[in-house]
Image 1 (tube, rainbow, N blue to C red):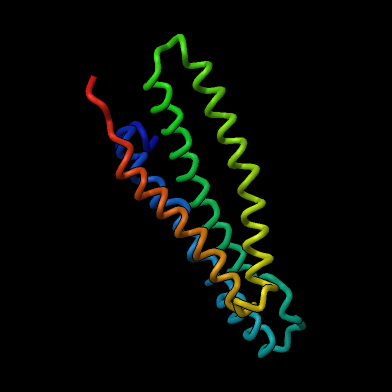
Image 2 (spheres, helix red, strand yellow):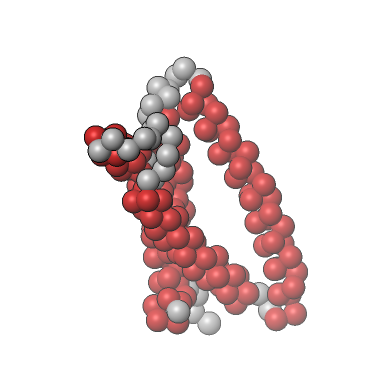
Length: 159
């Protein structure tokens, strides 16, 4: 595994930079799909622009799987690190508090993302053609900030 090869704290520093910031690349799928859609229209294939081409599907699958793999490395590593910070008799309490905090933020995530998508698509402040770029750009910036916070604050303590 990455944690056993790189070490716990090096993988905790590396994983946030390799997971969420790749979300920046999702809007490129629009250009890929437009290229293949125009190619299909030039060859007299009947498409109406609403179809997702195979290259776009493969591209999005790669981006999302890359994101999820390194996010799981980060979650596994942070769980190991938090379990090492408390006495063995307090691990159950620490894991319970950690799960509660994670559940709260997992509930807030879709709410924030839904507000962001609705605002960027229909507010009139942001052009709807660039709304997806703004959404995925902001989500990528949030991922980068988590990476920088991990570099600043996650340090291996000497025992």
